[in-house]
Length: 135
Image 1 (cartoon, rainbow, N blue to C red):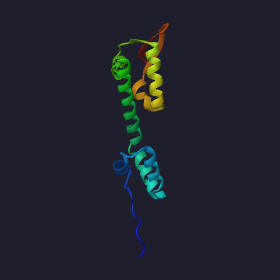
Image 2: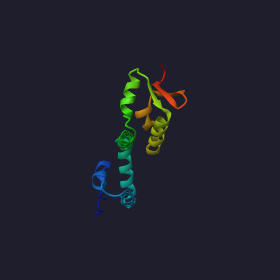
Image 3: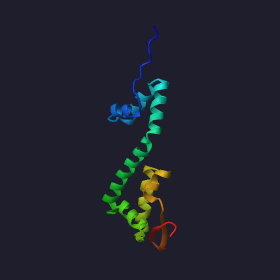
Image 4: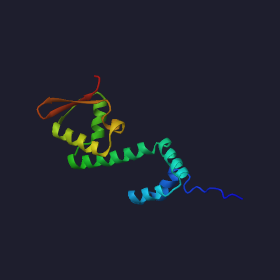
């Protein structure tokens, strides 16, 4: 009788439930020790389950909290204000800090959650105007 292959983890949510408290390097070691089939199943579950988006969103939310603490600027409130049609003036140095900080956390489409449809134009030396793109 052939021994049936056992799954160590059914999918990514189960893998995450048991490994979320490990350090990244420990989680990678554990993942690499799994069979190719298990790795493939977990990766597929990760991609189809939207986990990448969730993890990026969580990192960005933590970064937004840091920005609010450091600069006393609520970036999501600014976004809401600008997208509702109200422009906002801001120091260019603050805007640059926000952009640089968030770009170290994430990139590409994940930043659309914060910067999507917002345009920043330098109105005066050292001052930018945030407006809704296309208006």
